[in-house]
Amino acid sequence: MSKEIFAAFYTQKGGAGKSTMTILVASYLHYLKNYNVAVIDCDTPQASICDLREHEIKVVSENDYFKALACTHFRNLGKKSYPVIRSDAGDALDEAERLLHEEAVKPDIIFFDLPGTLKSNDVIKTLSQMDYIFTPISADRLDMESSLQFVTLFNENLITTGIAKTKGLHLFWTKVDGREKNELYSMYESIMEEMNISVMNTRLPDSKRFRKEMLGDRKNIFRSTLFPAEKSQMKGSNIDLLAEEIVSLIKWQ
Image 1 (cartoon, rainbow, N blue to C red):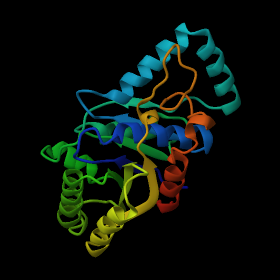
Image 2 (cartoon, helix red, strand yellow):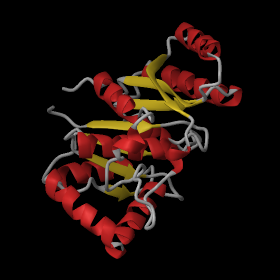
Image 3 (cartoon, helix red, strand yellow):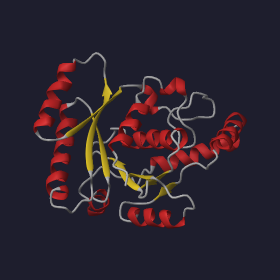
């Protein structure tokens, strides 16, 4: 790997879980797969990833269980937690350049968590500089319409014109209910295939664990910026499969 990768989980639809996906995949790659990762949280005004990191640091400092866990974790890991930088869409690329120049260990992948609107020129500018964009979708008509509209506009106005540096724009299924018929997904996928839209193989289940974060009285870690998800929590979430498929799609230079 000679060049860092800029990547984003992006969708216009609120509540799709792009910030959660950013946290889970970043932590999996940094803590379990020996990649060096950084996150730039420019999803103003909520900045949920930065807020989670600050909350976790507070929990670790005040809770003996998590304090001991953190000491063991980082001693065995042999490196620090990945940086989480608070920014906005207009300054995010400058923050990434500063990070690359100032960090002693250069990140292999920088994830950008962006606001879910294309009405901002700053968002479009930053999104167009992503090497890879991963868009979560669900088998909901309004969600699909919004996602397909975004992919079509981005492809036609930014990728095919050469304005965007994006090498890959990939969709993946989330909130998959095992009771839903596979025919529904097959129908949507055939439509996307006709539109030449890439759909990943990994599907994420509809699970409450995606909303679970580290709290002082809870020992089952899943969504955390300081720790990888525990094996018991990872099992069946397919986050490991998603992260591995993302790595396989990236063309490392």
